[in-house]
Length: 322
Length: 161
Image (tube, rainbow over all chains, first blue to last red; front, side):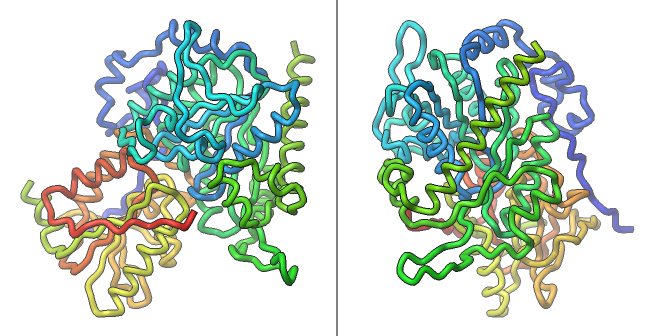
C-alpha cells in the first residue's frame, strides 16, 4: 500500500533554548543529540551582553518577505534614508543578508571597510545620523561568495548585534534575506534582548510572490513578531510618455490587498514600478532624493510615515503601561 | 549506498538552475525548460530544493498533489499537461499550503539529502534542480549529495541591474 508522506513542520526551538533537542520538531534533526546534551545551551552572559549593547535602541523594524527580489533591500534603504531626513533622529541600517548583501551598493558604500575601536566595530556612516553594517563591508572583493552554512551565518549575525557600536539609535532597521530560516530565527532570538516594534513585509502583486509571503506572515505569528504591515512593490507602471497604466505583474489572485484582508494585516501601501528606482539603487543614490516628484516617492513617503506613527504610538502605549 | 545509486542511476543529465539573487526567474526558467524539453520528446524531472519558498508546484498546477512511497523510495508527482514530468518539492509535503517551513540548516540539509537519494526518479533524460537564492545550506548540500553523479552543469539566471 502506498503511504502518504507529510512533514512535521514544527520549527526548531532554537539551539539555545531550554527545549533544544527535546521539542517535537527535534525528532529526526541531525543536531538533536548535540542540542539535547545541552552543549549548545543558552549563555546567560551572552544574553546580558546583547541586552547591554541594544539598550540604547529605541525602535527596531525588521524588513521581511518570503520571496526574493521583491524589494526588501530597496525598501530598507529608503526607509532608513526617509527616517534620517530628520537630523535629530539617529538611524541604523543592519543588513543580515549574508549571501547576497545588497545594502552597501544601494547606499553608495561599496568598497568601505569596517573599523574597530575600543568600543567595538564602527558602522559605516552615510550621513552623520545614518550608520550601516553589512557583511559586504567585510569581504575583500565584492564578488567573493560567502558560502556558509546556517551556524556560521548565525554567528556573524550575533556579532553584528553584540560587537557593533551603534551608540544611541532611534531606529534600527534590519534588512533580511528571503525565506524563513536561520537568519530569521536568529535575528528574532537575538533581538529578544531588546524589543522589536514589528515587521514590515514586502511583496509584489502576483500569486507566486504572495504564496511565499503568506508563509512569512505565518512565521511572524509563530515567533510572535508583530506585523506592522505589508508593502506591495512593483504595483503597476505608469508610462511617463503616454501616462497609460499597465500591470506588469498582474495581481491574478487579488494582490496584496486581498491577502491582507484575508489575513487581517495592514496594507501599508502600494509602490508603482519606476525604472529610476533600479537606477538609483545601482548608483547608490537615494531614489527619494533623486526623483522627488515620482508617484513612487509619494508612496514610499506615505508608507514611511505610517511606520513611524506605528512605532511612536507603540512607544507611547509602552510608556503608559510602565 | 546501492539504493542511493539506483535512484539517480537512470538519470542521464542533471542540471542546476542557480542565481545568487532572488526573484530573477529561476523557478520560471526551470519550469519552462522542463516543458520545452518535454515538448521535444525528452523524459524530464524537476527537483525543487527551495524549502522555504517552493514555487514549482503552483507553476505546474500541482499544488494539491501528494507524495506516495514505493519499494524503492518516494514516488515523484507526475505533472504537466500529459502528466509526464516528474516533480519533487517540499510543497507537496505541507499540510496547508501557507505553512511556513521554519527550519535551520541541519534539518534542511537532511531533507535535501533525502530528496536526492530517496526519490525514485526512474529513467530520465534530464533532471532539472531548481534552487533558492543564495549560496548556503541548500546549495552546499545539493552539490554534495549530487557529487557521485554526472552533473551536466549549472544555468545561472539574472536580471539586468
